[in-house]
Length: 130
Image 1: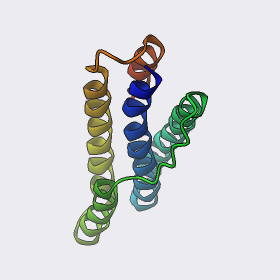
Image 2: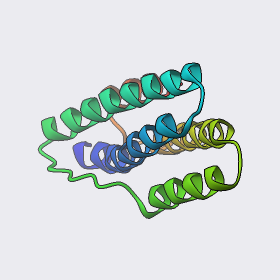
Image 3: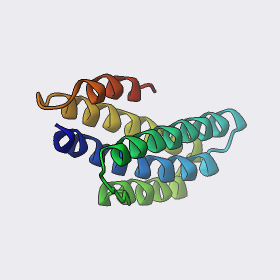
Image 4: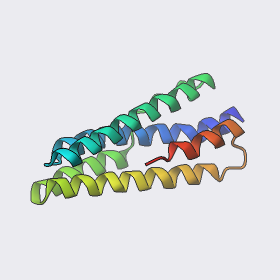
């Protein structure tokens, strides 16, 4: 079961690495204080969640070196391109919303694995707080 749990959590860790990077950039691009601080707060939440996932992987004896994904790098580049030709705040918010939806979908997909342990299963839905 730890192997199955690790297979479920490791990709989530990579997605969270992407989100921390993307949301940091989005917070910088947002032009109004409220949007910027809200995105920065969500970035901090995702950083805390990443730390929690990494602790769980460590407890399973998995040395997961999460570097993010190619998709995450693409989202960041897309955000930069969109902000160059339009409203930075709207582009930032749109990409954050897209990132949250992707995280939620990935967590739900991983929960479908019947081999996941109870602790991981109860952890994951809480992870989807957005």
